[in-house]
Image (tube, rainbow, N blue to C red):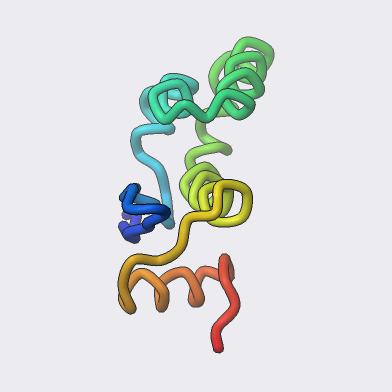
Length: 97
């Protein structure tokens, strides 16, 4: 089960997730498509074609953390509250202080 974290940047709020992605497991490349995560969409689309869908099983274990890390490191989002900050520290996405 995935844990939800709240992220903000310039009064824009987004939801990040840490843990197993059931949506990626069942819907595969549609998840990054709906999240506008274009590079992962293209990679997962072609991997699913080559592996006959097995790539969805692998990505289900890593995609939520990968997406949340991308929001923080490349797009500049920050944890919106202490709970989200603690979850991100425990997951190893951000450093504790």
